[in-house]
Amino acid sequence: MQKISLAAKYNGRKVVVVPTMGYLHAGHLSLIKKAGENGDLVVTTLFVNPTQFAPNEDFEAYPRDLERDSLMAEESGADILFYPAVDEMYPGGYNTNIRIKGISEKLEGEKRPTHFNGVATVVAKLFNATLPDIAVFGQKDYQQTLVVKQLVRDLNFPVQIIVSPTVREADGLAMSSRNTYLSPDLRSKAGIIFEALEAARMAVEDGERDRKIINAVMLKHLRSVAEIKVDYVCAVDASTLEEAPKFEPGQRIALLIAVYLGKTRLIDNALVTLPPAEFPPRKKRFVEGL
Ligand code: AMP
Picture 1 (cartoon, protein in one colour):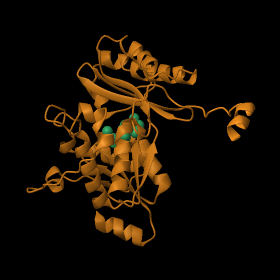
Picture 2: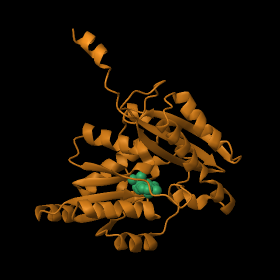
Picture 3: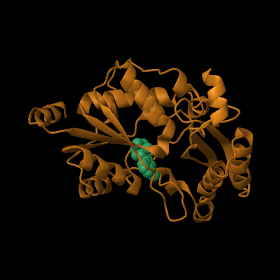
Picture 4: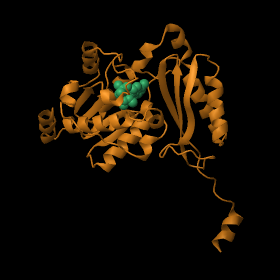
């Protein structure tokens, strides 16, 4: 893989990587298409990474279909599908783990304490294997995009990170390989997650700035479905994921939701940018200017 990437770079081609865990859907394919628009050699990686799953999570059950994935990736413009085996990525004696503090300890990190260590480590390994100029990640996993950006900054990876918008089903449900776990009945109720995000986004756009009220709007929608158990909902600063009681003009807010629908854990998010501060009244500016 490294030889192929180095040869491409030597010939002046830009290498773009799209890391995935496979069982591809239209969300992944939009990332592969975006990769093709931004570079010359598109590498899709397919690796269900055991180290980002906790022992009680769905590593074994995670859906897999290499043949289908390779056809879909190729049709969407991937030049290479890189699918290492687990013991190639983590051979006997493997002993390194990247731990990112701060951003990866909040929210998803609090609920899944080893998850982002696994993500950061495998992303670093995939970057070293594929040597990309650019990597494309989905906004769907918003906190993951912040963790990857931190990794790139801290460890000097010469990789530009592109974040691509979330692709949704007709009822607004964010596409996910895990949606296949949902029974038809639960699937028909899953659109409420997007409705909750939309309601909160509209509340913010209508002027609501109180974090508790924004959260309550999301909770009200989610609680209308009995089978939903809320893991967390929050409205936080989009760069730091810090909770502030109120939001300031010009601030970018991330609305984040994690729920269990039956036994299936689903996450989704929306970003809202608050309008900038109005220009201060003329008289006040004059007095302050003195
Ligand atoms: P996964 O295979 O779930 O690890 O996802 C691989 C990449 O696809 C990650 O960067 C995800 O954020 C991205 N992705 C997953 N679902 C979607 C979606 N519905 N829309 C856009 N990107 C997505």
